[in-house]
Length: 146
Image 1 (tube, rainbow, N blue to C red):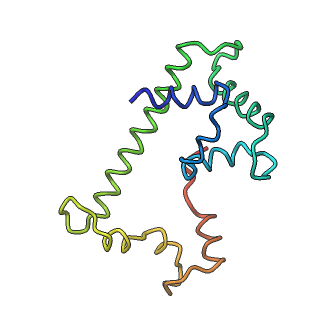
Image 2 (cartoon, rainbow, N blue to C red):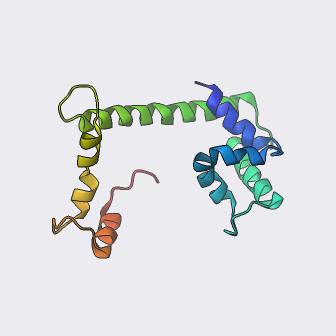
């Protein structure tokens, strides 16, 4: 399980001559590439990639000594592992919530019928979300990340 964080670090810390290979993984790669595309022109320049790599280096160099050592990489791995464990817990909880008949499986019907956030945002319960309802839901959502 510790290979995924290392792979991500390697991706951002090494040159990207293999960038065209992202095409096969476009759905997963697109959000990362969009974040790196600072001028939103749909392409990545060498400068944008270098900037993204510099930012990643800053995040990994915890003691700000200009060097990323094994201890800092291990801390990054631990942080990723912690987030993965949290997501696994959330996924299990969601599975239980979605499995209405408790048979250990989620059918398409069970999956489609469970929409607590929609129901919460639909303040007048008419089965439609207006711009005002969406705005209100966004404003009132709990802030989990700081």
